Length: 291
Ligand code: AMP
Ligand code: MG
Image 1 (cartoon, helix red, strand yellow):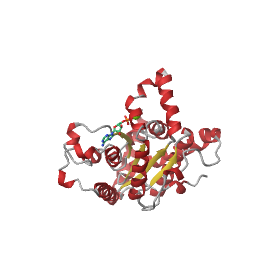
Image 2 (image 1 turned 90 degrees about the vertical axis):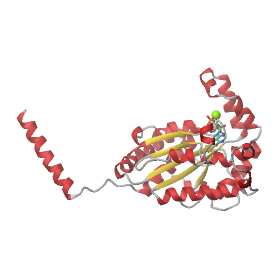
Image 3 (image 1 turned 45 degrees about the vertical axis):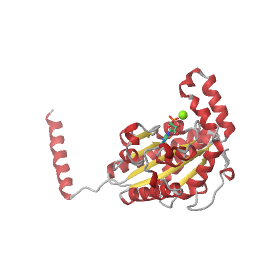
Image 4 (image 1 turned 180 degrees about the horizontal axis):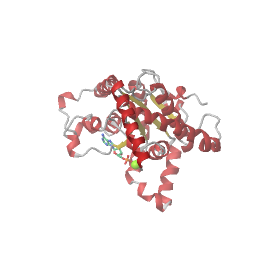
């Protein structure tokens, strides 16, 4: 079994993304992963998710961040397949609307925080507000009051985000965060595929090319943000993303382990409820006999 702990970002450590592999860095057989290991993880997730739903006290928030075409959508699709859709909600965060911009940046995020019993998946997240906002210096032209735009605004936001995730944890919502780490060359190939393949054209956006020009600035923003917001309770995982099947497998592995560790339980029936169930069983069994 792959040790996923080594993909975790140590809180506060200085990191260089070039030290993290974008390529598959563990021996794994694709056939075995796709035919056995991945389905086994998904089965595990499905059973644990049912217990989480029944327990109805805690929730799990799964955050995905990455450069374009790193495979966030595919990962969500493949890993969440097989889980009861009643208990999983995916939220995609796009360029904020004018209503969203009228509020603080966590306003739209918290509306999508998972309910008790649910797994909430964020396809992009509040982290865009320390990534794209930083790379494009968006705060200068935003509605933020000028006197709050101090030079340490990003450190301030990291603190706010850590506080927010701590708040969630203290209220029963646990968080796991994935950065899908793709190489610039693999992104080029995937974007070209979106252009060559007519069925994939819809996924292509000219803005992806614009963002790609800022690759280094994005990497710097990630390098700064990841250790500043990776905590023991809501860690970041930097996963190699050049090989889609391998990334999906790692994600399924981390999530299965996370839910195992949360160990949700079916609620215990009170004596009163037990007695009611026995009474109903008696009625139904007798009903059957009369037919
Ligand atoms: P996609 O996920 O490919 O559909 O693209 C969504 C776009 O919305 C990306 O370019 C994100 O960077 C952008 N986006 C998401 N959140 C924010 C935000 N808070 N501020 C500015 N742009 C954002
Ligand atoms: Mg896109």
